Image (cartoon, rainbow, N blue to C red; front, side):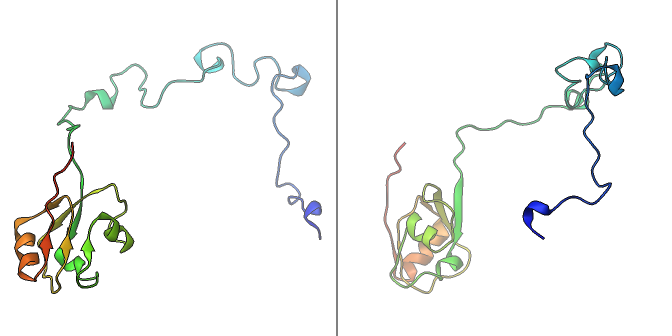
Length: 150
């Protein structure tokens, strides 16, 4: 058997319906769409969510809340996760991406204080919580203060 000899099983496929090819085809004239009306015309039928002119559900539901366009998303790292890095390593966005802890270098990073840190680190990220700051300094590390550019 060769690839060019492969065929579907007998009866597995029906010939395509040839619409609008005259009355003799059985699908001529209106092309199985009935007579006139919205469904017979090009451009289709109604949109998703259309309920026949009744007020649709998505318009009946109340609107709630808003989206703050100035919100800044942070990638969160806890102190117990930092223990995967070697001692005296510089903790910045690039080193965290290399370690597989965050997805992108462009992400803003915040370090939180869950867990303990048993090594000294040089931390250079966007934000550090107060408890994390105390634990890093107590372990002999330091935090590089960097002014965020707007």
